[in-house]
Length: 303
Ligand code: NAP
Image (cartoon, rainbow, N blue to C red; front, side):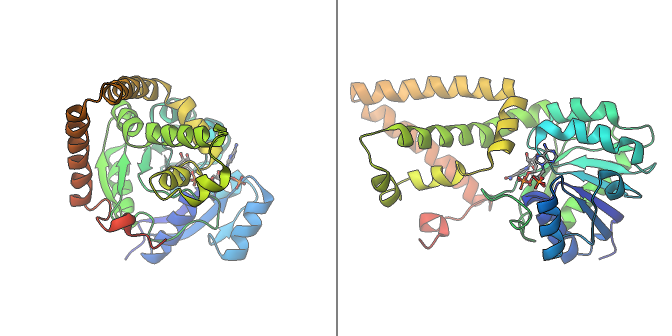
């Protein structure tokens, strides 16, 4: 494949950036990739495992001459990083991000983007509960969606090139409005994470169930909550603080549904519960038919 960008700079070298690097190498999407992380430890690790063609010790060096700059840091610091790199960006470059929230990132980053530089926000819907420079892998984005969320005035050619880049990384690509993105993600990702954190917190608080019982007998649903609740605390703190309105809206609806189910259990209303669970089962079938999960028992896991 001919490289789509000559020089790409990855800012932040965690799960998403490292997966992007390995996926770029797999399909030769970039001529040269520089990387920067704030801590010496992460930069040392990156150098040791060959993550990035050049690991830089400053933001300015990393973005120098880059055609594409990818902000892959927690949502809450995107604005500060944009301010710091702004004077060093090459005219005609594209700045993008991979943040899980779009409205807040757009309002924080846009004011710092110099004239002649394009800002095209994006969000790959792919991840694991692991983080850091060693957690990435080339196939993370394969057959997953990447939502491109052009901000007002995003250059159409820059948008088109970024779409090609994400397809090259293995993703299916769609374009979405920022507010709609944040609402959709509140339903599909942010609130489910909060519910998982809550359930694991309940088990942790509950004195009557011992830790070993929780660990040994967790196959029945709880184990999947613990996997989600092991996700990076900084990233998820920033997601909730940045997508406040949409998550509160969906949590309000969730609470109403929970009360309805609670009442049905108390009143012994089996028909209500059965109808409800039939409806939710159909949604699960839709996800499998769309190729977004496996129908194998136990989610295809061995243990
Ligand atoms: P990660 O593995 O935890 O890596 C985060 C990177 O950001 C690290 O290199 C870290 O540097 C750096 N960083 C953290 N705090 C910083 C700060 N205050 N200032 C400067 N740099 C800082 O995170 P990730 O999972 O790749 O997530 C990166 C972005 O992708 C986030 O915006 C997240 O919302 C988004 N995202 C994540 C997922 C997912 O499932 N994980 C999915 C889609 C999108 P050090 O290593 O030096 O500390």
